[in-house]
Image 1: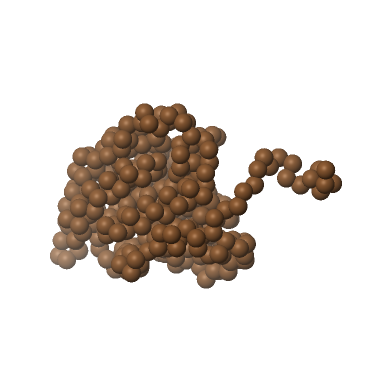
Image 2: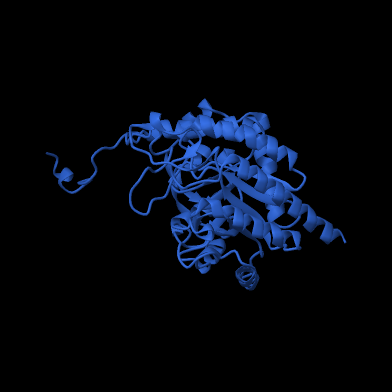
Length: 359
């Protein structure tokens, strides 16, 4: 045995080559129309964050994508509703491929696209890229959570809005990553409900950073960034309960202002804000809609977990053929009909806010 094997990679059971970002992106390239959609939608989100566009940003879709066919059907349905309500809502489809885990569980389409524990990451990166291009082709912008610092090179050019999750908001790696991403990024408050970590993240991500990464060709490299001015806080509740109430939001906006940061917030109707009860997302959304209709301007966006079929189901690895089509295998989601109803109510509320401002 080579002596170096006694000290290196002692607990690595296997290493295989990762396909390069160039190879995946060239297999599923963005069309000129796709690129235009991404550029324009990123700009629209930034203008909403800066209150230069008075529409409400709504990021809505499955907790995580496990079936690209069902996700694409959802996208077609959502595109029609988004077009109809576009004068008051700017809808971005939630298309999450990586699932953070507190302990163990299915880690998302990129990590395990076959849903059987085979962990064919190269296939997962390709499947994720193909789905994003398909969704863009029908004219619908997409939002993703960025969990692994390498995967953005494979998909980020197709993403109009991004998120850093509650478990990673305080991670320096993810703050550095966000500082170099080309789209607006929402940092969620920590799982305990505290917001200071997210505020600190905005400061870090808005500043130049230097960190290890990979090039488009897949070579390990040093990445230098200019900072991302379009980062914002996403309130998702926490262990102590919801945090989307008027007092909490007013306090957050004041703290952002004192920190020299833009006073803007997006509310996530799921997670701690719904008590992890998917049906209570409607309660959150309607309360936010009521306040928006009354003139609340600090809330610039809302997130909803939604899929074709309400609720969730358990995945048994290797038995994906028995799954219900269009139902989440991670967090429980609102069903389609409930989603449309809420989007329509949010549109009405945004219109009422607009009329108050004009008066």
